[in-house]
Length: 321
Length: 185
Image 1: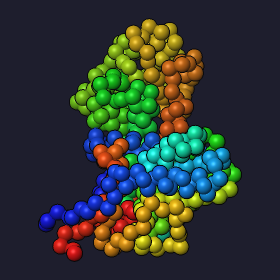
Image 2: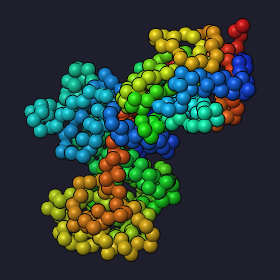
Image 3: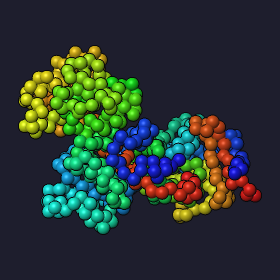
Image 4: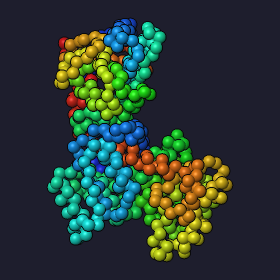
């Protein structure tokens, strides 16, 4: 009845290396964890005595707090480290930071880092479990998982659904985790945005490309609307935010022309009036707050699955009773 | 390697008779159905709890509230046995357990660790007026000072033997079997 210790491996760095069965198992494990957050005492003792470090080299509110709630609801002890005000600012390398933490006897590291590949790099160098909370433009696996859980909650399945990721796909680790996870579970995936914000060769990941949001809305069952990072305008990827909204904004007028009932996701934080209009974000098709709620459950599931140690078969059989 | 041997300990009728008696004992101990709450421990305690509640309803004309407990996250051996693929549901009766007389129903009582975990979980949900432990099989071998209040049958199983309670919903039949490693006598 137990999963082997190698079920997810030591770390969760990306969805790309996982297979459909592993992704489904994480989503299924997340289901019962939802209920814990509804209890009067929102806490179970399963990770009691585990120490988890949330190491954030980039600003994050939602993801860090979501991980912290997940950790605390499983009774782990948590420490938050932000790059600002830490020895990182004094020039310490990532590995030195991690080794110092290891020396204080920690069990897991949840890390966000600006460089693609940072989570894998760290995981290969320290014995603690490493969970990627976003690395550069690479992946943000728990965001991909919570998006899939939310879609599955509302549509009952992932397989066969048409999901279009709209916006700045080029810079988005959320997009990458969505594309890998959704295609593995049998969804049809498309991306939509200005050519300047779509990665070259994105078709090779098995996704369709729309350069007009009206076509995307015509095609899709689900829209995952990405945040347009405002600094992209200064960098010259788009001429102006107003123009972006006029051409690619998910507006009420546009979704009212959708041939079927849409489901609208957004990983947050939203730029209302840029990539998504307020009457869509607050409207009946948006499930943005469900994503936030599911984020805690998915992260609890990942922490739980990675924390399991080496099963001893005889002992396990005995304790079954 | 040869197949382990399975020996029938209780057939369908024997299990039904035991559950009917256990249901009567629960009602007798509680002097009726009022204030009772029945909680089945995942997984097979859940089906046994449903059967006991149905017995009580047949005898008393009132069905006590029934819930389920999944104690996986309260076990003390995650690193020894690894995580479970899918956790069961914990669902308390609608009126909760506060001030109620709660009966925990499990299939097999062995080390007592499951019950210890169930008591811990229950404490996170409230404070029952009284908690009873009711098991279909007590096979001995306790590692904690925990004893049942109501028992279907007491057996003496060796540490290398396993006792399996089978229920129609999950196993296709109602029975209790003893599984011996082959070669053992």
